[in-house]
Length: 258
Image 1 (tube, one colour):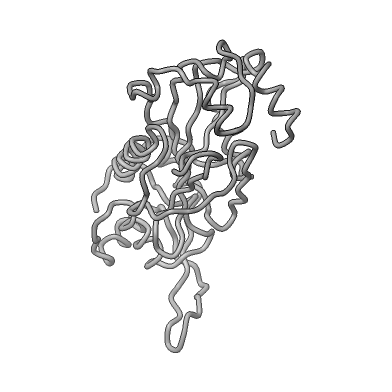
Image 2 (cartoon, rainbow, N blue to C red):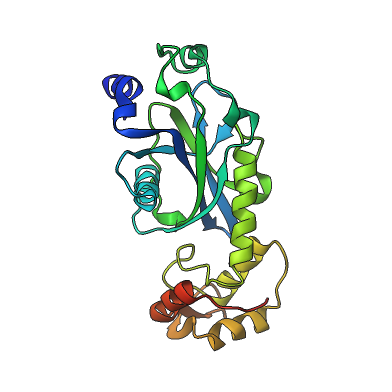
């Protein structure tokens, strides 16, 4: 939806294809340089950054809509997606938007009764992605993007700071029951890399030796015969997730402490 004709058709006729009053706001998380990152977009006409978003088609299953929206934003398929909250209490969600906002921000003419001006409730999903594979797609309403450290997220548009806080809380709770990491790390990784990832997510230091022992004992990762050369006398072994065990743990859950 990048051409003016496409945008005008979406504004005038989108209610025929999409559900009104309901959207999906994904919190997209990646891991880079030993930091947990979040993808934010720069919306045209606004000074602050915000989350991406999208609408649900009339006859589209909710999970399918979430995967479609994420693919449109990141070019990736088969992502780890988790629904975590419904947002409808903030003043932004309660009040209706004005035609003046669309004229000022996007130079678009919108009638008072347009479907986009009505109150919208957002369903929050968080997605775990391989940072190196993401190819961000902006559209008519956005002009730039940036990956931010989760510990340094600025003041955001609307209620998006609340959305990020709740997504991170959910992720940190689930890390004790699900083997988070498969989508955030490359296929082959070192023990310090996965150790650093979990520390970044949890926001606390973990005993490296015990941490690795637990993951290996659970059968979630396995040691490879390959090493990574990172300098003189430094060639750590590589590891990878055991896909069958990982998927089983996602379905059945696990209980472990760090």
